[in-house]
Length: 425
Ligand code: AMP
Ligand code: GLY
Image: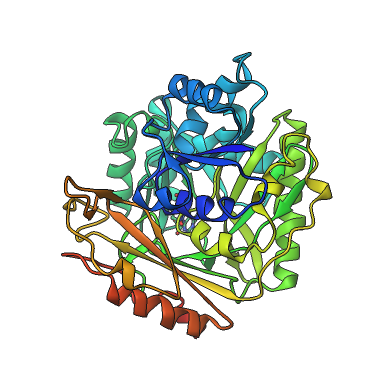
């Protein structure tokens, strides 16, 4: 079969690496992809939200399965577009339609959904321009730290946490009346602060059945010791040592199963990944957020831990046969380090020449923000440049391998965290 992967980050590189190994694959296309994905398939320079051009590509290349990496095309309705276009409706889309993607596209919706189905999540209230004054009073009576979340997609920046009441109030005003995060902050969710350790759990759903993928822990802050601004994620480990069988059982019973049942009750035909951003509070799992896609860099640690043919699994979604799948995992630990450009997550330069990738042997290098310059040199082209994943029997050994590779790869201003997984070794 011919497959198209949408996206160009480390997540999509790891999908491409895995799918390229499937005996079911004839030809793999990645749109737009990056120089790294060219090793696994053919890059096609079409933007992930150019639905018409992607549809035409699928017809001309006889593509029958599309795996959507990022949330943007999902929230914009790529799955609805394909389902409602007669020449495209036969294509299996791995990702939810708009009615499902709203789990990530609207924090207010996801909070209402969790409350309705009894899924543990922080207490909250939503405010907009009509209730701004009430919101400010609500903050005065709330217990710090205050957690303010833009309702819509805000490129990972829409969450503000502060213990300073004056700052919380001015932020609420800026979000709602000055649209600090654009239309995404027309509505703002204010929620109770939860204290604990976070982890990400991933589920693949066919609308009826689901399978649980390996869990991972992401390291969001830019600096060692979890300091500095939030990023998309600076590294990941899988498995997560504190996610014991008992804990994961609670996650399934209290969170995953009620979510899948809730989606069915809401008549949301959810065919794709659900990313549960969880927090472990005194050994009880709570939901911090849902995403309608896999995480990045978590995917780069999770995918190598899947032993089974991933394409064969994805191929069961169209006929809602995930219950027939017996997914097998590798026993080893996977650790991922994200190498980023100097300045990320704020402004950063592009076009710096990357050296020594050819010297890397015993780890996987998933390219993300890279491109080829006019002389065909590999150069940086984004804040998140390369994800390195190392595998070994212990987290410690995997981290040593990953750190050695991270040291060897070079460009001007390369930055990465040297303490990923620190609390587990
Ligand atoms: P989100 O974009 O919803 O994942 O939020 C970004 C980060 O903010 C999360 O990964 C948490 O570290 C933190 N966060 C969000 N909600 C809460 C909460 N209710 N309590 C504590 N931390 C939170
Ligand atoms: N690593 C967090 C995310 O993908 O949202």
